[in-house]
Length: 359
Image 1 (cartoon, rainbow, N blue to C red):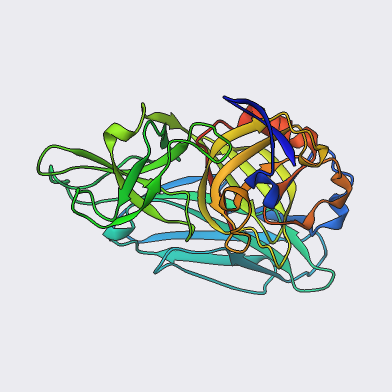
Image 2: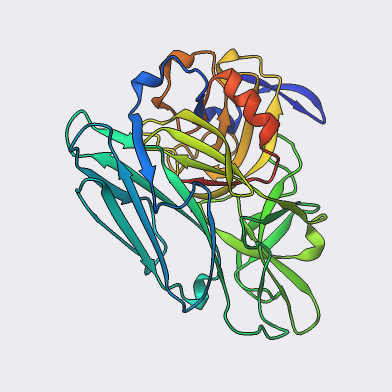
């Protein structure tokens, strides 16, 4: 049980954040960092800088070449990638130094923002890895849009938009009132905080009604739907993004394409995995009576596909811990945990609405 501040005062309840804790270990000094994979390989030219942004027209080819090396003489290195968009390929073989090539010709249906993350590892044991390196690729439509076309509400260079949900509303499969209902976008979170949603696309229908495609807090994760513009508050713009790598227990916060925070993390155990996908921060909570959650937690729109009977439906959170010695590792019911010093630092850097990519 934990104390959560709501408009009705302090209440004692088991919140969704408790189900799995994304545990972020600050680079600055987690004494337990030796528990996790050793991240000592070095990215080298021609690898783009961490957080680099690319803009490509739909139908045009994008190629990115990466290279990484080990300090151990003659060590063979293999590069790899996390989840890639449809049609993209990444090729690499053990070599010294290790090299890899991404090739992708995005389709017009893939217009919008994509986060690509790459890794590197040695051939010999014990394996050494590189810090994950992420890039943002913005695919734009190559033709001049028609007045009734959908338009993106994200932008090149990692620009995203979010809004508070003013009124609970049905979300539809298409931007019209006769379309199938795919879910509901609630005005409040289970913790009685005003809900936030990430804005993906907009469209004005034939009657002049403005619709917005948003991310929905429901299973399956990644669900989206169209809601009327009037159900949302003012649009707000961000240039931050948090990228989580579950295999290397690593999290990086980017602002305007520059990494500003990096930490080792703890994620869900095998039977309670932290879900992968694209999410966003929709609330910030504090005042917990149980120190296991630390001083602060971020609530995401991500949900556990396993612990669906937990309070509120099993939402995933990012929070602190009073047991930093267990980090990094697979230690939670699905959430992300970090030492208290790290979560407090992240709270100063990561605003509400920030997109969160979990690989």
